[in-house]
Figure 1 (cartoon, one colour):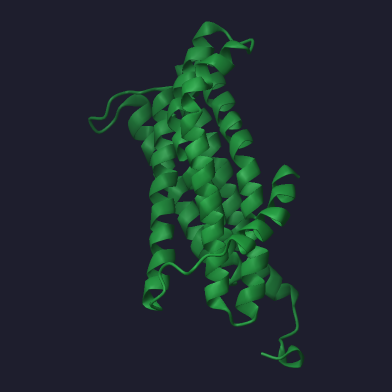
Figure 2 (cartoon, one colour; figure 1 turned 60 degrees about the horizontal axis):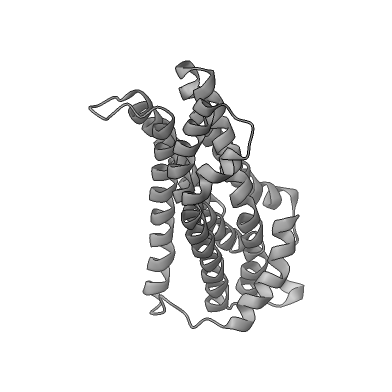
Length: 246
C-alpha cells in the first residue's frame, strides 16, 4: 500500500486497538490480586507471603517483559511493508528472550532461601515466601512469552487474541486457586503454594495455547520456523533492553 493510499488514523481505530490491551493488563492485575485475596483467611503470614512473592516475581519479570515490548514496533513496521516473515522473526526473537528469562528464573530457585535470609522477615513468612517462589518462578518464561506474542500480534493489529489468552489465564487462575489453596475436588490443600501453582499452571497453559496458534499460522504458510538472524536479534535488544530498564 502506498503512502498516499494509507487510511487516515482515527480515534475509533486507536480505541479499537487499545481496549483489548486495557483488558489484558487488568487480567494480569487480577491474577496477583486473587492469589492474595484467596489466601487471606489463612492468616497474616500467608497474606504477606503471597503479596511479597507476587511482587518479587513481577520485579524479576518486568525487565525481560519490557525488552519484548519492542517486538510490536518491529512487527508492525514489517507487517506494514508486507513482510510477514520478517514480522514473525521478531516474534521468535521475543520468545528467545522468554526462554532466557525462564531458564535464569528456574536456575535461581535454589538460591531463594539464601536471598530471603538476608531480609527482615519472620521465619514463618520466609518459609512461606520461599514455597510460593519455588512454584511461581517456574512461570517467568511463560509470562514473558505471553508478552512477546501479545506484542507480536499487537503489531499486526490483532490485540484481541492476546486479550482472550489473558482472560482465559485469569479464569483458570481463579479456579485453580479455589481448587488448590483449600483443597477442593479431591486436590490437596496447598495453601500459599497452591496459589503459586495455580498461577503458574494458568499462565503456562494459556501461553502454550497462544504459542500453538503462532506456530500453526507459520505451518500454514510452510514456514513454521523462519531463518533467524543474529543482527536482527541484536537490533531488537539494542532498543528493547533500555525499554526494559525503563
